[in-house]
View 1 (tube, rainbow, N blue to C red):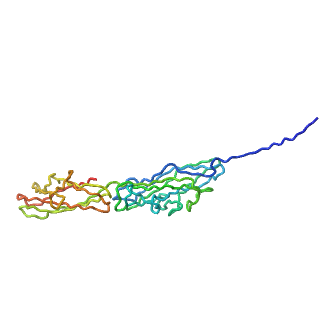
View 2: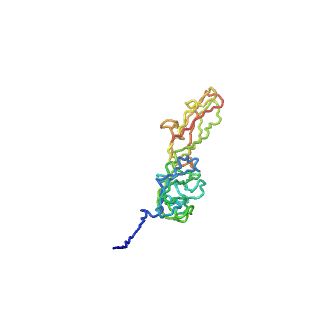
Length: 317
């Protein structure tokens, strides 16, 4: 006896997608565009740059050729053209600067919704059976000249929170303008510059003119101009001259003189505590003027001739 049968077998295949189903890119860390320490008298142009690491990933069915767009948001006050560095004290003036997409520093990096929406494009390649890519991207900064004449001596910063990383799928070298692509990450870019305490000083000669012998007491004045960073406290000292005792010389002959802080000539201007003049800088664009009140003393024994001395002006800050 023979028997026969029919076996029906049903087969099924389910391929599950990975947990994420899109191309995603992100930057690592919190980058800083650091302009360093800048002399307020020399100012810009001061270039700098920062290199930022990035990484991308994709799902099995997602595009393997993509363009990542790195954008930069406005500064904390909403500025973009230009962005501005604010003194940490909150006092004006702010310092204009900007962020660029290349070393040529001709195109400002912006963000959709801002005064410019240009981003920095990076090709992201994840070929078959490759699901991640990584690399670095560079942003370029420029602090232009001249700095404002009332620039303060302190740290200035701009914090650009909410800066976006966007991805355009389906090809390399795609445009990073006009809000293209999906936002896959946000980051904070900080820009900063330190303005140090700095001073410059100039002075005019103190000339007692031509006097007859026997020498009688005579008065004259000169001026000292000090320019310091805004908010920089300083003191001006005058030394004792070449002899150390405030005497003008003509060969071996000497005549005595003194320097004072006031027209009454009763407050000596020296270079020890209590004898210096003090002030606070207004910025390199504004000089503070100080008058030196001089007096040469009567000397009936003084010999005829030309007398001179050199006094050093010392500004401490």
